[in-house]
Length: 487
Image 1 (cartoon, one colour):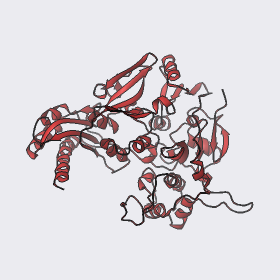
Image 2 (cartoon, helix red, strand yellow):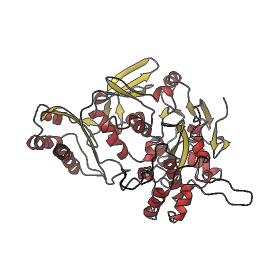
Image 3 (cartoon, one colour):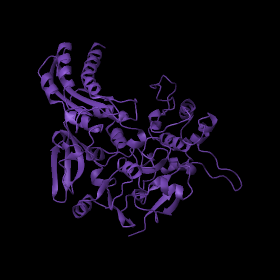
Image 4 (cartoon, one colour):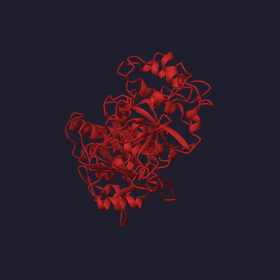
C-alpha cells in the first residue's frame, strides 16, 4: 500500500505521523500553515476554510471550499488542497508575493479587521471567484438582488463564514468587486484538468485505521467483517463528534468517493440520487428540476457544509431535526439499502424506527435516494429557526400538494423537530385530500396539523411554539398559493 499523501499548495506531503482522526486543520497547522484557524471546531464559523480540487459540474475540476476542522486528513489521501497561503503568487527573489485578486480586494475595501476570520473568508470567496458558471451582469438590475452582486458573486458562498468584528459590509463590497479569473491564473487553468482520482486508502496509526475501498462491493464486504466501523462521507457530523465530544473509532470507512454512490439519474418515473453526492453537487446538477429540493438547499446549513454533506449522511444519522427528511417524506422518497448480499428499497416513511434509529441493518449502506415522478406541482419548505440561514431547525415542514379544479387531489406533508423521528402528517393529509382548497378547509386542517407529532420543550423552542408553527405553516402555504393564483 502506497503511503498516504496529500498535495498542499502544490507540494506533496506525507500524512504520517498524523493519527487517523487528525483533521485537515490540525495537519496544516502542525506544518506551519497557520492561516487556517480554529474557531468553533464544528463547522459553523468558517475560519478553517480551505479549497479542495473536486470533480466539476461544468468543468473537469471545481475548487470547492470545505471546513478543514471537520474533515480527517486521511480522507484527502491523494487529493489536492489550497490554503490561504497558497492563493498568492510567489514574487521574484527578495520581493513579496503578489496578492490573489480576492485578497487584494479584501485589503482595498477594508474587509480585514482583527484578521482572524480573514483567511477563511478569502478561501470561501476564492471558491466563488472560480465558480465556472458565475456570470457578470451589466448592471445591478440584471437579475441580481441584495445577495448577488453585479459580478455574479453569490453571497451565500460566504454564509458559513463569521466575522466577529462585524465587518460584513466591506467584505460584501470586496466580494462584489472581484472580477473574473484571467487566462494566466494558475488556479483557473487547473480547472481544465481532471481532479485527482480517488485512491484506495489504508492508513493505520495507534491501533486505529482509516479505510477507503475502491468499489462498493469491496466496501460492503468490509462492513460485513467490521460492522462496528464508523462510515463517513463529508464528515460534517462525525467531525463534530471527534472535535467536541472526543469520539474516536477503531475503524473509519470512507464512502464519499465511491463511484456507485455518486450517480444521479433522471428516469421516466423517478429520479435517483447517489447517497455520496454532496448537496452542492445535487443542487447544481438538478438545477431546479425538483422545486422542493431547490427550496431546501439554501436553508440547509451553509455552503461550506453543503459542499461536504450528503443525503446519505443526513438520513444515516437519523436525526429528528435533519432538514432533508421532511422534504424527502413529502416527495414520497425511498432509500436503496445495499449490503454484501444485495439491495432492497424501503419507503422513507418506513425507514425511521426511533430516535436516531432505522431499519438499516449492520453492514448496510444507503446507496441512493429515489424520488418518484411526476412531482406534485404545489411545493414548499418552511424552516423555523432563530437565524434565517446556517441554523438548526426548531420546526421544519415540507409540503407537496396536487391541487386541481380547486380540489386537493393529493397531499403529502413531512415534519421535522416535532417527534423522536421525522414523520408524515398523516391526519392532516387525510383531512385535506378530496376537499376544496379554501380558507375554511385550510384553517380546519391547520388545527389538525397543530396536533401532529409529540413536540417537546428544549432550548430552541417550546412544545406550544412548535405546535403553533405547524398550523401557521399551512396557513402560510395557503396564502402563498392564493397570491400566486391572483398574480
